[in-house]
Length: 175
Image (cartoon, rainbow, N blue to C red; front, top):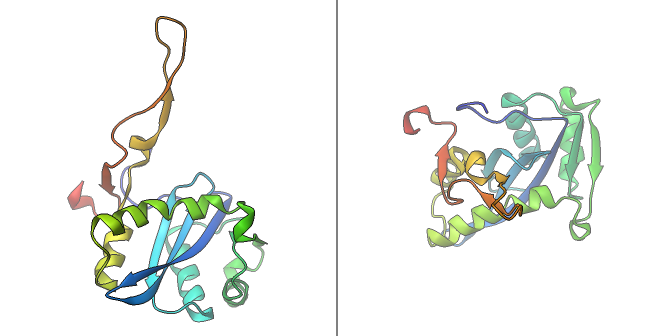
């Protein structure tokens, strides 16, 4: 496992957005997840338009290689922004319906954010929320499921480490 830095994108990328409330105002939290469910990048923005989607695509491509396939919901901003970025011209774009459950990888990645939002009694500032969410992510090693066998030959599943353990991937001074 790599130490520090952002996770590298694989063959495909799941993109999704969710609403968060900062001091009573709605903001969008854009999230990129790889095919294994690892969070690659997050971006807090006020808008949900073509320019916001383009900004998010460029941010993801700055720190990750170009994927072969992009999976998104049916938000029209994604294909409009993708058409403006030459690096994504040959990338296959798959649309899924939110109810179909196909985009669960991206949808499930929102759950830890909602948990943290509740624990902190809501996020308050867009800049601080962006810094917090891009820096602190669940430690994949702590969430890894392993199998062991006991004396009866049974093999119960258990997780290594505490699931609430957080590690700062982008901030080497805090590790």
